[in-house]
Image 1 (cartoon, rainbow, N blue to C red):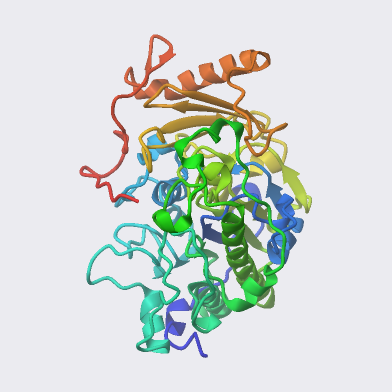
Image 2: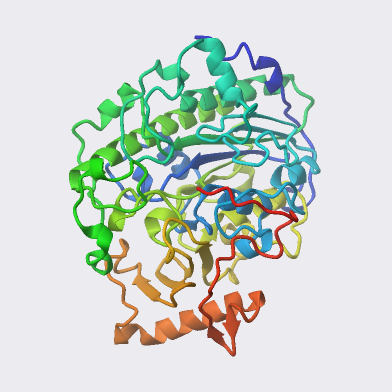
Length: 514
């Protein structure tokens, strides 16, 4: 099937030789290739120590670059996470504290800032913006907004293409809902899958690049999977058919919860946010989820090969991240929006331009976040990083200038799925403190000795000093929000949910639900 005939003319871009001041003085500005997936948890890669997951191309990218071991998504659902990625700002400063509508315009926007630095900017795949064809500085986009409908008359580029390739067929024929945790193989030819489409469009863009105007390229490639539906083509599902995968981790702190009672999956909503459906059900979902990861990994390998074939790879800054994770039944939680590692910990790989001279195959354990990518891109492109941008350039961690790197990264999410799921957390990847806004409950996890968060040690006397320090750090973190959050040096229980901060750029924000 010829996937490129319809969109070919949209993808002609450029390669160039602009000299830049700053970090890459006397060097070409690097091409910047940002690869994003939706709902890929941080431990679902072989290079992160999970031998159950087949990710040879991501492993190779990490071997040729840097693997950031403690990459986080500060607000672990799609739209607020993507707002942080877009702006380089923390949740309070870009204004989205939970799942809602992305602002129509921000003072800092990644595509526009790179465009202002003479990049040709193009986005392919899932943007998750409102409206869905908003550009935010991109010269153009080809979008796959699978699972989302904003208006009755909107149809994504992927679905338009699908209608031309397979008239009369249903792209959702697997019949698994967008937030369901059931699993099944894709029922149509593999090349019709949105993962294949996104990868193919990215390859075509790269191959057409030489026909452009000589500018450096910023290309965002955004896969809609491994987010549910867990629907890999049969070829990938077969890779995991007899493969042992880890059962969900279940902490001591949740075993007496109502949702801990073993329940028949048929008696619960297919998109239930909580539920103990047994280890075998969860492991089956994980196999299909991992298969979707492997499918994405294969497409990433093709994208990397296209860059090599066009002579762009050596001078490319290539990043792979996800907007948030997926609990996959850990602690009887499903999907995202939670403070636990399955939800907030994301893949974080950076392959640097060869001119940087950074060691290959390095691993960095400093806490990094999606907001750190924009300042990194600005520095590498020879631009200026605004003084009030919350993110920090990753170059500082690579060249030794990052001795003053942040101690903790902040995480939070406004109320979602249950009234008590309204929280703020601080972590350095070694310890994590969680504050529940509506109840005043606290959680403390020693991630070094207990990476799966099996035991809440908040009442353990030997952690008293560390708890006090983290509580004080949380007071400092929330103080700018006023007395509703912190009063007389003490954390305050909130009676309402704050979904948008006063700094959100739109006058009338809309809660879209989840």
